[in-house]
Image (cartoon, rainbow, N blue to C red; front, side):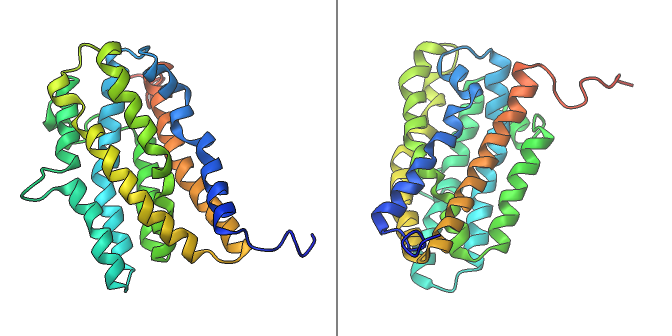
Length: 245
């Protein structure tokens, strides 16, 4: 390999490499393609909402893990807003509450979401792996793994634009507050996460490591949807071939 190939990418080149990972974002999974074409049945939509709820409640835990490893007060002062966005405060009930409203909008009682009654084992394992990653890695690495948010606004806009027509049975008064809320929050979070990433990974080796980190997070999201495809499209939920006692 030539010395030129080993030179670090410029900030612009590095950012472009990160954005190129968008093709692996779960928006491109067949499950999401069917979802955004209005081709999922009610069970599949409900299953997606129920399983993604575990991800929603895990996000502030993940962000608290990042903060627990971070000795930079200024970073913590910014990062804590992510926890507030999901857990809520006096002025905003938060993203977790908004997702509970989405659950009610698709016909799932909030007690069923809070109990994780419908959570698939593979989805749980994937999300737990992400939390453990955030606990164990340097805070900058864990923070940069959140950069799948680069691709999130588009997927939220898809739902806001298309679902009212594709899934008229979803209660519109409750169903879309989370997605609207995240349009603004995700764009703000990306700015901070991208700044940390571009500042932290300096050498080509480090930059390539970050591409692996981002791929790890993309793998988490993709694996979650693989599990949902198996359960709700292929109709092969866990232990489907084992006779029930």
